[in-house]
Image 1 (cartoon, one colour):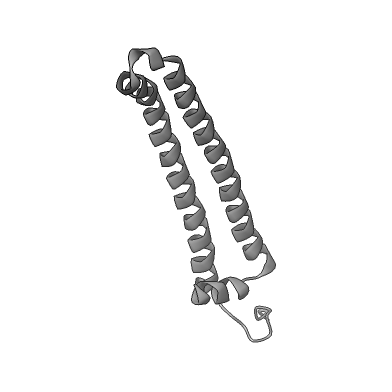
Image 2 (cartoon, rainbow, N blue to C red; image 1 turned 135 degrees about the vertical axis):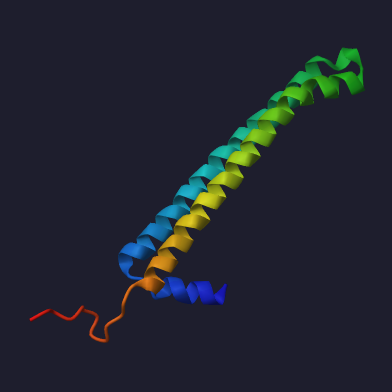
Amino acid sequence: MQRQAAQIQALDDYERGVIALAGLGYAVIVIALDVSLAVVAARAVRRAWRLRQLGPARAVTASLAPASGWAVGLIGAQVAGAAVAVRVVNRELAAHAMSPRWPSGDPPTSP
């Protein structure tokens, strides 16, 4: 973690901005997906409550069957969002490591 933080500090403002936007985008995705998971869970509980006259076991299975598919899909989307955010950060760090460095900060001018 310390090494990656040092690498990020060594980036220029544009590259740090790209990394910050990747983190912000991932945060927005996580919040939206967590809210969606909460909605799915609330709907499953409501459906189980409405079907409680069938018995507890049948009510739970009837309410969780559709919810489990949604939950798996939403968790998969969150994992995919994390993979994209990490790929953006790693690409920026790799591009920065490959770029030539000049002591003065400016590339040499050709005559």
